[in-house]
Length: 270
Length: 311
Image 1 (tube, each protein chain N blue to C red):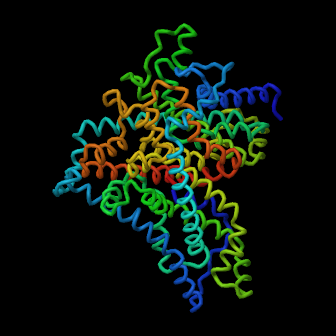
Image 2 (image 1 turned 30 degrees about the vertical axis):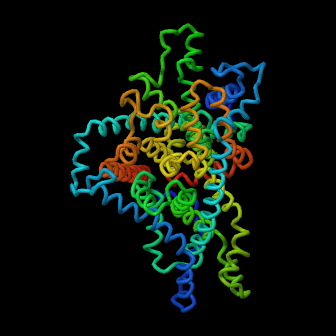
């Protein structure tokens, strides 16, 4: 039993903290609707045209397309690789598993900074810098450790009897994976897809290094350049920022639970 | 870190694949290798090979164009004499405190205050508290750059309450730029620790609290002997994540200050970027990468050890 006083004070704390976290974002949102280039708030004249203007001036159509192509390709590929390697480690077993699995887990602790330098010089040699394909390949390779770890844990958590009975029914390994196990693993795959999407879409460091050409830039890098140029048009800068963050925020609105539990469980990724 | 991860998500009692030494099982393990091979090859090419090569690069002096020359451990030994590096690692120490320890303490305080009662509307406040985690880092940086701007909301607020003397160009001020950046981390990390710790508190059995209250435990005792030990795993995750995040700070600094004013907000990752791609001194950049990687690894392992042994 807790007192009424305590109950009220709890709500006050939670609401105050939530507002504290929310305030900068809310302020920014209102800034993006300001008719005034200085960003002064004016809630009686909401200027929705700012979004269209930012879209045009920031060359966002082009860079959003780049982000979309890179993210969708990388997420699709990462998920496929994760399913295959998770099935291998979790169900089939792998020759040399005792060595290979820790070797792959090592990748979860390897930060981007420590591999990016030779990657850049190698990719430059074979013409994969300033190329969407190059960045997609890097994202695929870097996604392997978390994907393999995640899907292995998922498949191992499924009851062994299901796999055995599929086998008895004469299903081959390939169809056991796709027809029997995958439908059961759907929630885990969804979480993996959402996390990969967020990590790839939000990437700045790799895109900055590998896509220097403004024609190839992703939305995050284009936004970085845009805010450098449009220092005097605060409202447009805010509108552009919101456009770039929208895809992930929209997914977050729909799949809050998956995002939070996934980030918590996947906290080990970095 | 992998240890933590394993008992986080792998439910105990899951049956490990049994491996009788039959021909069929052997065939399956080779098939497993086949299924794994695309991922393994990509991983080797994108992560393992460059990792080895970075270590190799770090033993050379190279400007990215002309012939590299072997210098042994010189790049590492020079760290202690390179004021830029020392300064950047010093900045990161400040960021570690602000990104890691401050959100940890705030999160703990809130979790303990709220541990006694279930709050309604959980989904809503969790959504907002967690929002900074999903926002693009570039956008977070732009939001705060605006807030700290000379004519931004922070200064406007200070003026409106008569503290004109306090107003300044926060990110352009030699003394205030770094703590201002640190505040961004407090803002972003705090919601994360709070959501994490509240979830952890809910997982602590109610009976523990009830028993403590029957025994007349004070709030502090309740916190010290029930909440704190119950949150050990969550604290390890939060610290590992925020501290390695602080160590690797790049996007935020690149967007807001580019390391300035002067060198007041440089970080190792920013120096690495500049040394690798802007004014190439690739050997030193690689050595920085290796040092960062080992620090991250050491911190992750260290925190896990401390948290697991403390009992």
